[in-house]
Length: 620
Image 1 (tube, rainbow, N blue to C red):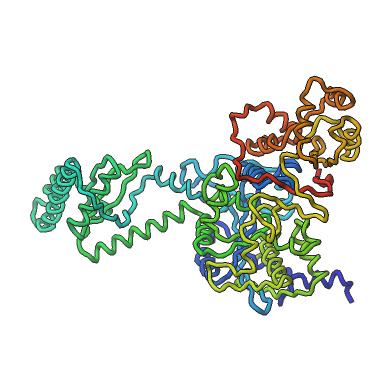
Image 2 (cartoon, rainbow, N blue to C red; image 1 turned 45 degrees about the horizontal axis):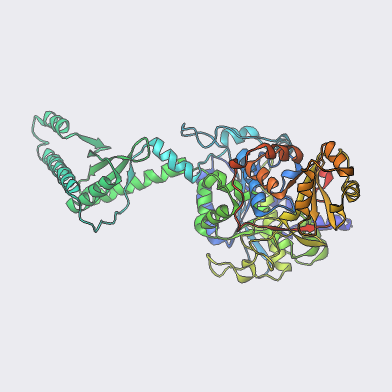
């Protein structure tokens, strides 16, 4: 009989078939099979209740303090994630539409998309360059990641903002949507413009009609050539057309309104100029109502093909957004800053604007870390396998996973299986927390899940305590502290522990006679909390005073420096992310305050202090 741990491993997903085979059902998608996969994914998204996502990046943080820390406010946490999203790139994006039935059965459709930001349109987008971290690339290489396949067969993409710019650069004619007629009376200049264009279009249309009647005459070729020369007539494909120059969007509106009243057999197209504004309106003459419908269908097909070529993988993001289904993630702040940066638009400057734009695209984001906080021992766990292992050992909540891809067992290395772990952990947490996650409709979460939605910062308060002003640090001993009572301290001797530093400070001055606490942020910097209001300002004034003396004066003369929490905010906002926090704080103090705008009064002022060390030095 096999030992118990091995049995538990064999029951890992409680599946009907062997786990190894299940991992092979994560469908690997590259440029060569992307078009065929897209239609299947659309169906699976429509049939599912949730969509799990998991991202593989080329890097994340360059130093431990660059991670989101317990004393980070939403704005500082967002600034750190934004900096990483702007620097690094996505190489894999796993998507798993799934549903959970009342019988604890998980029905999943996992896909793993291989990406590479290739300039396929030769317009300098989506990316000229990006950063890589050797540790990330080494890990991917050990897992058998095929970098050649990624570069040559990875799916490219453009963000929504880049697509708009690309369409201007490409300059292809685009159909004009239905225009609502203006109720205002046109000016004299507009009336003259309308009559001139109407006369020109009328003469051109009649000439095109007449040319068909004279098609049997021997001088047909010469006559048609002369007509084209005189009227400025051209051909759009096999259909005659004429281009009308316009100077403003107002004139575009006037031309469209005139054409709708003038004839049913004319189809207008917009010809964009280099600056993005409309350069001219192209009018195409169709031979009949049937031909007009056929032509409009041709335009629609051309636009769809162009969209696939221009948007690339972003078609997947648009499908997820259009479905309005809840998106399940792990470490959602990092994931969605990348998604916003790569597929939507450049990231906004602050967290509030980011959340506003994100909710318009993804109205319900569920981070499984928020559900994990409901189970005490998992409050500080950030590793998915560790969380699953703990739940399997302490709770009986079997989940039967059924992966519904047909004929998708892949040979060789399989990537993207983390998205299955996220789906499975979410289902297991829902079962343990007695949450029935079955969706009654596509646009609203079940009430039991609403309180966990759109909480992106990992150090946020529990759902019951969540406000816009606080951050929660999950520990056994927490105390609320105002950011004004926090002071960053650096310039002390290397190798000094928090306890040693606190002992030195206690006897250095009367300001440390009251209760205070010290924790190391990294090996170069510590954070001090003064529990009595006003002492932090007293200390900062003291350390900058020329009259300082005693042992504290000696520490200052040896290089001890201090700064308030606002300086740390400045470091994060400006992206001054050096390897040592001390060096970053030095640089921030050298920068003029005019280079950044401080947080508004509505931004968080309080964090929660906790009794453990802030940094795990095993990570250093």
